[in-house]
Image (cartoon, rainbow, N blue to C red; front, top):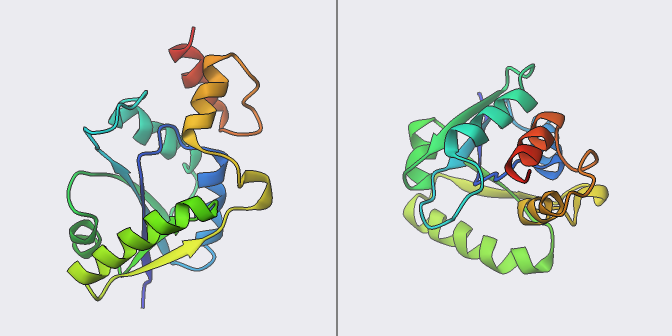
Length: 159
């Protein structure tokens, strides 16, 4: 049986915390679909296509990872791609309440799909895309936090 997980998010931009979670998830799941959300309610720095391209570059050598855009209900997306797991990261207690709400509503809409939560590696527990953008905006060092191509993209946006 192939166990497929969907890892949804805006990924604006993808950070090494996201990458770490996906790599560790690959030890559990046969395939991970990174579902890049097209969320008009969020004012993203990067376009959907830019975010997808960054993620594809980061995971270019990993066949068990697929990157797709997400523009519908997550449970419908997961069912369409034969996934029974939604993979989510929990950095802090502040994430917990929101993630439990999402998991509960998803389970009520589609009981066959489970949410699985993973905590970040210690060195990435504080990372968020918002913090990364703030560091980039102030021309701080990013090499420990994002892939080199993402860093280049951030530098371009904040010239």
